[in-house]
Image 1: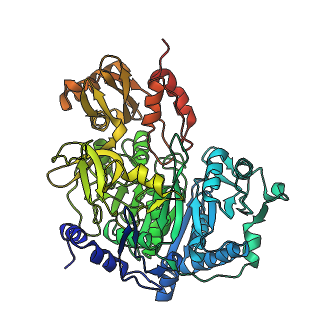
Image 2: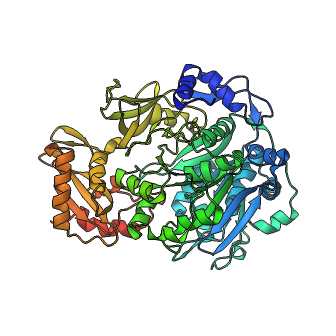
Image 3: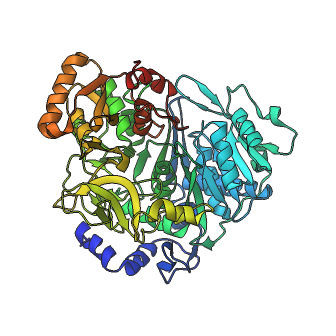
Length: 633
C-alpha cells in the first residue's frame, strides 16, 4: 500500500537524511551517494556531497538502455509555423550527443558556461542537455531579451560560447536575435569566443553578416555535420547544472545556481509524486524554456521521468484562437497540462463559455496544474467547471526550482480549497512569522519562511556571490529561507499565499492584503482579471486602488462596476479596507511569464522613479496606464 501525503511528509521531516537518500536511489549514479545533506558550511548546504552522476544520462541514455528508445521523448508543436515534429528518446539522444561534440570542438569543457538564447524550438532542449552531458554550465536567457540584459548576464556568467538562432516568431512579428547578440557582446566587458547559430528561414539578419572579428560565428548544422558524438561525463552531485537569472527592476541580476544531483532527484521525485507523470504519459507545460517552469517541467522533469514532453511554440490565445490548449491536448493526448493562471484568464476573457472546447476531445487530460501567479478562486471555479478535471494550484519560485506547496496528485489527491496551493511539499518546512521572527497562529497572515536546510533541487547559492545569497534570502530570519511572500496556514495545514510582502499595505494603521481584495474583485461575474495596489495617501498612509479587465462581452459601466466592487470588498473584508477606487482598463502590465507588475504600477501611482522590467510582455500597456495611475493635477 502506497504512503499517504501525511505519512510521506512526516517521514521527510523526521529523518530527511534517510528520506532523500531513498529518493535518490531511483536514479542512475556513477557513484551512489552515502550521505544526503552536507551542512558543514551552514547556512550554505549541499546535497549528496559524495555522489557522482550525469543528468543528461538520466534524462536520455538510461531510458534507451532500458529498451525504451522508440518511446516519444519530445513533441515540437509550432502553432506559429503550423508544423509538428516528434523525437524518440533514441533520436533525441543522438542529437544531444552530437551537439555535445560540437561544444567540445569549440573548446567548451566541464565547468565552462554556455549562454543559450533560443526560442521555443527543439534546439533549446538539445543545447541544454548537451551542456549537461559534458559538465558545462548552461545559462538560458529568455529569447527576445534586450541587449542590455544579455550583456549583464554575459558579464556575470562569463560564457565560453553563446548558442542562439536567427530569431523568434511571435503571432504578429518576427524578433531578430543576431543583432541583439552582437550588440550585447559589444556592451559587455567579457569576450565570448564562439557563437553558434541555428538557422531559421524568414529573418532579415543572417550569419554571414557577422563573419570576422574576435568572435567566431558558426552555423549549427555545419558544425554538427563534422562533430563526433560524445558520451556522458560524470560530475559531482554538487557540480552546477545551470545558472538561471532572476530579473528585478533594480540592481544586477541574481544568478540562481542549481546543482546536478539534488536537482535530478527533485525532478524525479516531483514528477512521480506531485504531477503523477511517468513513462507513457504526456505532459504539456505551456511556459518558456527561459523560465524556471520551462527548465524543470518542459525539459528536465519529463525526460528524467521517461515521459513525453510537448514543446509548444505559440500562445494560449491568438495562435489562432482561445482553443489552442484544447487542440494541443487533443492532438497529442496530453495527460497533464501545466500553465499560468494568467493564461487561463486570457482564455476565459476571449471565450467565457469555453465554446471552443466543443471542437476538441480532451478526454486524455487527467489534471491541470497552474503556477506563476496567484490562482484566484473565480478562475479556479471556471476552469474546474469547464474542464471537468482537478485544477491544482502549486506555488514555487525561480529560487526553489520546484513546488513549495502543491496538491500531490501522484501521492494522494487531497481536498482542494479555492485560493490555496494546498499543502507544503515534503522537504519544505513552511512557517509563518511576524516581522520580529515570532511564529504566528493559525489563520494569521505573515511572512512565509522555510526552515533550513531547503530540500534538494533548490538554489544552493547565487553565482559567484555566496554573501549576496545569504544577505538576500537568509539574513532577515536566521535559520530560515525568506520567500518574500505573505500568507497564512489554516487549521488543516493548507497554505494561502496572498502576495509579495510589499503588497501588504497599511491603511490607517491596519495591515491589509491586496491579494485578499483581489480575491473579492475576481469573484465579480464581469471581471476577467484584476490588480489592487496600495497608493500613497497623506491622511491614511496608503489607500487601495483597483484596476480591472472585463470579460469579453461584459456590459457594465465603470461607475456601476465600481459601486458593486466597493460593496463586495466592504462586505467581505470590512470598512477598514477603505476600498473606494476602481478603474476599468484594457489590460494589466505583465511579465512574459504572467506576473502582474504591481510594484511598477505602485511606483508610477506614487510619482516615484520606476523601471519597467525587461521581462515585460507589452510595454504599451504601461504607457496606456500612466494617465490612470498618475492623473494630471
